[in-house]
Image 1: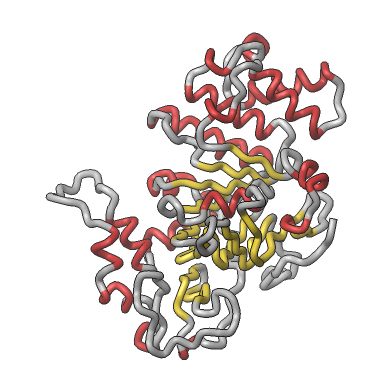
Image 2: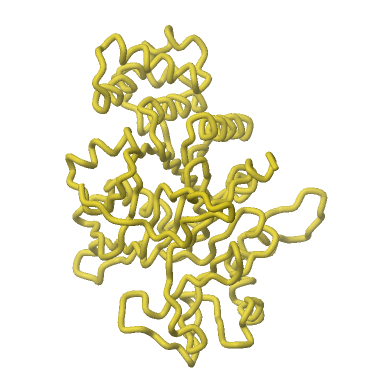
Length: 379
């Protein structure tokens, strides 16, 4: 496996001790897909994000914005062809301390990383579980692929994993088939399978889709508990901003394959700076507040005044938006995504901006936040 370094703005804390290191850092990732005889479809174009141990990074945005492609790229699960990694790196810090670019690893290396280091929960458990095998067989298969254990030991690990995610009578139900479980229990099986090998990063792609709100709350609380117990990071992909508010430490907002805003969860909800983020938040019903109609995202992003609220707007700094005419003073660099820069606008806040004359020399870098809600509560 090839080694590299993760960009780190500071390696020392105020007390002089070595600062913690990011677990994974996405650097200028671009992924496109073949479109037959037409031009390639740019699903992801210059995405940057960082996630730390014991941190939940929520990636939000509407369907097609590039959330799932970004997460699947980190496990090399994007089919190639038709997919292609055009540029960028995904730097990951292994358990042994080595830092590797996940996009450069061979398939043999990735088989060792998947499950052992990074695991994924997919949206729909019924289509992810094989209906002709017992859930036990499927969990045990994941264990034996990645761990040097006997069949008896693998069975016990599977039972313990099912017990850890709250499945009653795991010794008996390990012999059951997927159709014998409810939707919530099937999702718990998927979580047990993902966590059986003790991964350090869990990619959760809409893990509560099609579940009722009670089961949804149980699943999310389970993930939060396991994250703290196992010192694990979670990348939570979702459309639900209520889920984000309750479970995220840091939020990454995406649109059209790019990051439009990145901030800690409190900062993002208190001071949304990109018009698209304000549109998302404005479109949510508010309890105890009577409205004749909800504000739509379109109403926000089609309002020119909304693009003048970003700090520095009077100096020519403009939020990036693909459907707006580029500013007249656009200072595009001769490079991919040269018209766009992910710019730090305050201590814990980044916004995607047009590269105008005011910021023509600014460089995009992976946003970097060690913020955790649990740390604030403990303080």
